[in-house]
Image: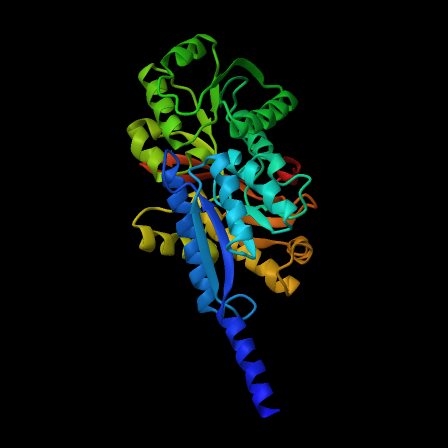
Length: 373
């Protein structure tokens, strides 16, 4: 009996020593590499903190990472590998909306929890009980953008949208809220991802008499856009969103970044210990100022860890219930008031403005009428 007891004890110890595998999809190469490296750094910081505090359910977290290059086809292949070969407990989608839209149904069908760190498209989570989200929905961010345009006193606005799921969802929210606020959209145009020459569009926009520009895009397109806008003498408020939220945007745009507004969720001026601690650790790890993407990856793993501890297990239904039970969470990407039944957080937003080469707080948004999906 003593030998049987020893064997059982050894088997239990071996199981605990194996750790809990957590899958990560991120664009670590290609045009989105800066975001991919940032989100992975945030996730790694969170994993180190969790492991230093005793792990998850008494076991260490082991990250299994694949580079999806923000490519939906690669994302599908890698999420299948994470599920079938790596046997991960859950997956953090640290990629863009297109890749996350492709990956989440695969994870959902296998009943493996998937949390999108910052992808904005509603269909990533909706109708998929095992899919969750850390960031603000695209339509919600768009509504906050229209609220800001109104707050700045403008009446006539222009809209430039990147031609993908990210841009479409942002524009939908902006237009809906603009109509409610009496804003007139006097110019509207889409452009392809990777576009470098905005001058023809901007010349027509300037002639429209728009008093503000709402422009979706990622940091590379955004930098080209604002540089060319200012060189054409288009001296109106430019309102971006979380795609601009990167040190690379400020670096590439140079002086033209000054005065640009973005709707996002990382408030650099917050005095919250959670935010201050993350900002310090990210700077120490990467040598760069933190961005929303890195903060979202960090928060995604920390929130999933809380849901696991609350659920007492790793199965999809238990994690779903665990997330729904979390309320009033302070994270580096805003206060999460609660999660909806569709897996989306109802959370605060912030408007940042570029001042002296840094993102600074312009205002914070906590109005649930704007923030609810």
